[in-house]
Image (cartoon, rainbow, N blue to C red; front, side, top):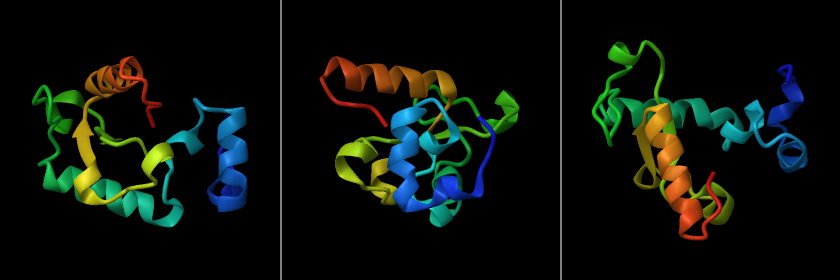
Length: 105
């Protein structure tokens, strides 16, 4: 999917998400603020996966920021609801949510 400026327009966000759940829009929750929030969480967590302990430096890429209580249910992107995870741990966390009948982010 190619990046489009209007992907961050709130009125188009959920329509786009319904069409392309694997796309970039899936990870953009608060539009203009998301990158700032994401960075604040990664700084708070010392750029370290809070499950397995791998760092961004060791991984060679930025870590994911995961909503503990899924955004689609809570619409909560407060720092208390966010945690830094590596891609592998993020996938495991989503699977755990699915097993408990909760829709992951």
